[in-house]
Amino acid sequence: LPALLPSALPSRPLALRAVPLAPLSPHMASGRLTKWHVAAGDRVHVGQLLYDVTPDRLLEGGGPVEMEVEAHEDVYVVEVLAPEGSDLPPGAPVALVVDEADELAPAAEARKGLPPEGLEALTRSNGLFMWQGYVKRREDADGMCDGAGGACS
Image 1 (cartoon, rainbow, N blue to C red):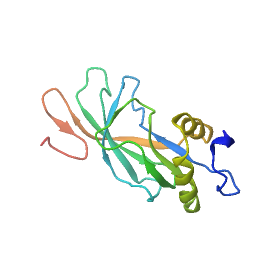
Image 2 (image 1 turned 180 degrees about the vertical axis):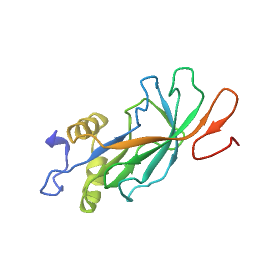
Image 3 (image 1 turned 45 degrees about the vertical axis):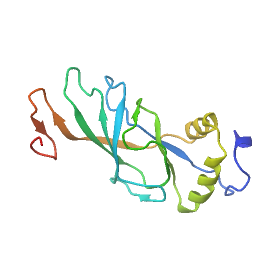
């Protein structure tokens, strides 16, 4: 793996990690990333919204549910990998983050030269990104909604 990384990295190990598409349910086979709340270069704080996702299934036999996913760590966004509207399997990397501001430029440079298998290996070896998902809006079979959005529109 070190052979995949450019030599211009900081002297400490680069903690480039992937933010996954949140696996929100054992019933979920895929999710549509519907909205980003952050962009490359942003500082993200604990509790800040990262993205909204609509899982294909959250509950057995349930209707559509829109979820908000927030960070449980302070990080900096290196790159958004999945555009809004992407349908992805749970756990797929949707963004790359680092812990420190001075890692942004070296991480972006390292990312340019990495083949997909190098990115997967690097992000897997640097640990998990902590997140939490919340129901934003839920629609049942009768079109009734609950959650922060109130009535169905």
